[in-house]
Length: 57
Image (cartoon, rainbow, N blue to C red; front, side, top):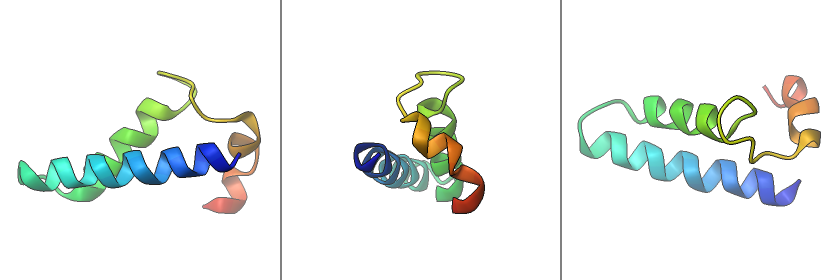
């Protein structure tokens, strides 16, 4: 679970940085990173993170 949280933070910040460089809002990059890491594309996140995502929001 800790690895999933770290992966979300690192990839989100990196994608936000890249989007900021090409003059998009950084939130756009963070959302795209979440979609890519999530269960519909690469499925890299632990199931326990997905189960508690409602409380994390």
